[in-house]
Each structure stands twice: as structure tokens, then as C-alpha cells.
Picture 1 (cartoon, helix red, strand yellow):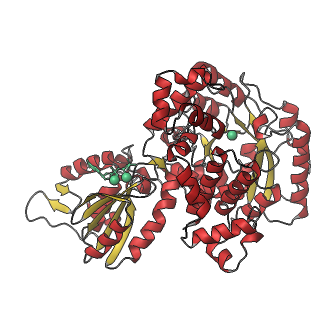
Picture 2 (cartoon, rainbow, N blue to C red; picture 1 turned 90 degrees about the vertical axis):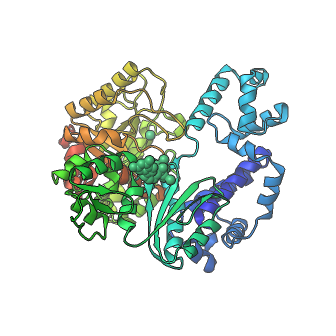
Picture 3 (cartoon, helix red, strand yellow; picture 1 turned 60 degrees about the horizontal axis):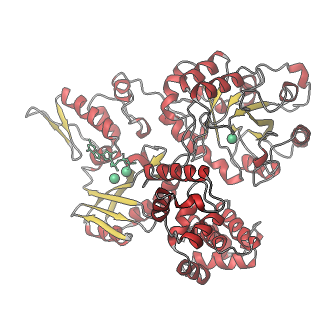
Length: 585
Ligand code: DGT
Ligand code: CA
Ligand code: CA
Ligand code: ZN
């Protein structure tokens, strides 16, 4: 069992105990354990081997035992008992927005609701209205949450799909007879959510790899000589196609998609006198001979196009650009020099300032911005002015110690209040190195109001960056109704940066807007919205979708070295105010 799977089980046990109304202390311990496992910097297996698990904060003797047990693939009696005792549907119900363990328990005890399907029926019959603690509002919320869930059925976040897929790819590659193996489909194109996993393999003979693959299935959905589909225990569908080495580049291109890209490419190819299929390239007139093709790059070249990276294959002008040799050199993860949207234990983060800084340094970044929540975000333990000043002072001191090479920037993720004012006064904001302004409340405002609200915030001279434009949570919460074009116009006019929030659940502003916005001069900052050290790796998810948005390093301010970055994030500051406090820049 890998660390994701172990964390999932700990989390599930915590939820099951919660449903039983058990000791909150115990529940918190399992939940903390799940997080600790997920955030491990070191290799889990090595920690187990060296019996050093208990050195990790949040993992005591008991948890260490459980984790060791699970990692060896053994059954954990407590988990098995709980699963028998509590209907599976209750856990699924807890994933609905607005339904915590107490409410689920009440529904089960009083109305015998055991699944989302039961709940839907009860809602339709208006049965919930009489239950204590379930008003009209809760009913509406639940109906909406259910609709969202149905819409999103089957799709999962790219990040989760990737975690699931890469170990499988590894196993395919090691399987007997396999010459080449690749991930295809939306996962390879780095789409924000993924419907199923697609694998392509070149193998000779094919029966070994086929057998291995079918063995992973909880259920075999389809099987043929060269293709098969299975369903994993998690419910995810996985497709496999096996081809010969000669066919591999053609099949790789075909199964990477998108469908729209494929259709356009085929039309383009026909016009040039060739017919392209998943098996090869054939001349329309006899006598013509196709050049040797060993890679996708050869394939694109043979049909008169420059190579199109998978992220761009969405039929958004990439074929036209490739025909003119105008595919840009897309941004790469290694070009990122730091990120700015990061939380610490001062607000709702799980790691301290020092821990976050140490991780930033370990990643080789040259700067790290700290942007805890502002005072109105009470639920996120937002900082009062006084606490913000203390933090700024702490950061300045930390920079002076020269304990780290990385430079820490003192900022804030300042709420944009419902009327468009900021949550701190200008005299506070001007003392910061940068300000991210974000909407966290009144998400239901109509388009005109919320658009005006955000534009007003962008007009504040001390705001540097607009955070997660639409506040969407992928597969969970719809984006706000903001008019993106107007906000982008305002950002450009006020010379503000818009964030590309790399949190796998956000990826906001959406990649579909970036190409045009950047062409018109908008600058991007790829952030992690990190609430723990492990989250700093979300930068990869941000870079993925930045690439889908055609962004190059010139359009992304956090590829700039510190000296070049500062004028962009503080351009309206009066530099004399901040005197020599930033020594060392
Ligand atoms: P997903 O799974 O919904 O996230 O999206 P994809 O793009 O992975 O779609 P999937 O798994 O149905 O198919 C994988 C690729 O196979 C797809 O991107 C392009 C290719 N493909 C599938 N069906 C068709 C088709 O009807 N026509 C063409 N030209 N290509 C197809
Ligand atoms: Ca797919
Ligand atoms: Ca598929
Ligand atoms: Zn936020």
C-alpha cells in the first residue's frame, strides 16, 4: 500500500469513528496521522525500515504500528470492523457539501437513510423539513450538492489521477514483453479533471502484459485481443491498448487526443495527400512513400507541422500555429523561482513559517511569499493588524539572520469584502512586500456586483495580485458568476497580476482564458495556495495548466529573479517608506 492509500484509510477510519460519535481526540489523531503520512518528505518505506516513523510529528506508537501494518498490505481489524458495522453509503453522504457526521448520523438514526440515493428520495418527498437541524436552506444546499455530484460523476482531479496512474505505468513498463509504455488521454494532456485512465503499450508477445493488466481489475469491463478496460477498486476505469513498436507513435498520438485535435489533424493531413490513422500514415496516391516515423515529433514533421506538446492539443489554434512554426516554448516547472500565495500556522496553515521557508529552500527556490488570511476570514483564523505586524517583523528578522539563502516576502491574502473594499486599510497594506486580494465571502453575488467588487479591489494601489479569480472548487463548488473578460481588462489597465492558483482543486483562473489574456499583456503568477509544506509541490499542477494556457516564462512573474519580480508586485509603493528593512535583496 502506498502513502496515498494509507492516508485514505486513516481518513476513512476517522470519518467512521466520527459517525459513531466516538472520542474527538482519537478522531483527530487519525486525521492528523493521515495528513502526516501525505506530507512526508522522506520515503515511507525507508522510515518504516529504520523504525523512525514516530519521529514524525503527528505519528505516535499506535499510528506507527497501524501504518507499518497497512504498508505491508495487511488488514487492520479496526477498519474491517467499522466497515462491517457502518453502511458504506454513509461515508459517501459525508462527502456532500453541507453534510457533516452529525447530520449524517441523524439522517441514519431518524430516517434510516443509508445512501445518497435514499437521501435523494427523502428530499424529494420533503421528509427532511421536519427533522431538527435541517431547515429549508439545508435542503436547497443538499439538492445543489447532489446535482454537482451527478454532473461530476466519474471524473476525478488530475492530481489524484496522476497519483493513481504513475505507479501503474511503472508496473506496465516492468511487465514481461513490454517495449514501451505511455499514459495517454486527458491525463497526458494535463486536463484539470480526468474521466478515465488510458495506457498504451508496445509489447511482444502481448499476452503477458494483458494478463498483468486484467489482474488489477476489480471488474473487467471489456476485453479483446489488443485492448481491455477494467474498473479499479477505487471505481476508476482504466483502458489499455497494446500495439506493435511500429504503430506506437501513431497510437500514442491518437489516444492522447483530444478528439477535436485528432479530427482537425486528420483533415489537415488529407489536404497534404496522406491519410492518418491510429495505425500509421498512408499515401492517398500509390507510389508515394511515408518517411520513417519513430516518434510523435517525426509524425508532426512528416505532415508539415512543428511538434505540438500534448497540453496544447485541444483545438485552440495549435494546428494553425504549428503549420507556421509558431508553437511557443512553454513554461517549465524548473523555471519557477518561488511562489507567493502560502499560508502558515498563523492563519489556517498546518506548518510554521520556518517549516514553510525550509521547504521552499529545499525546493531550490530563491524566494517565498507568505500570505496568511486577513482579519475578516474568521473561520480561517485571519490575522488582526497587530498579528500581521508581528508576522512582518518576524519575516524581516528571519531574512536578516541569513540562516537561509531563500528570501522571504511578507504579504497577505487580503479579503475583498462584499463591497469591494479591502480587509486592511491602505496604511497597513503599504507596509507589505505584496498583497494578494481574494474573494472568500458572499460568493453568491450576481455577475454585475461581483465583477464590480473585484474590479474595485484591483483599483487599490497596494494590491499586487488577484487570487483565485472565481473561487471554484473543482467537482465541488461552481465558479462565481464573475465576468472574466471585464476583470482581465481591469487587471491589464491597472497593471495587476492575476494568479493561476495551482491548488489541484482550484486551477483558477482557468487555462482557457490565459492564451488571449497573456497576448493582451496580462501577467500571471503561478501559486500553490499552500497550507502545508507538501502543498508547495502543487506548483506542478499550476505549471501544467499554465502550459495548457500557452504561457511562456516571460508571462509568469515568478520565473523572474527577485530583483526583477519586486517592481511588479510593489510597483505602486513608495519605496522610501520601506527604507532598508529589506536588506539583502
Ligand atoms: P476523459 O477520459 O473524458 O478525461 O478524456 P479523454 O480525452 O482521455 O477521452 P477518452 O478516454 O474517451 O479517449 C482517449 C483519446 O482517444 C481521446 O482523447 C481521443 C481518442 N478518441 C477516442 N474516441 C475518439 C473518436 O471517436 N474520434 C477520434 N478522432 N478520437 C477518439
Ligand atoms: Ca481518458
Ligand atoms: Ca478512455
Ligand atoms: Zn484564498
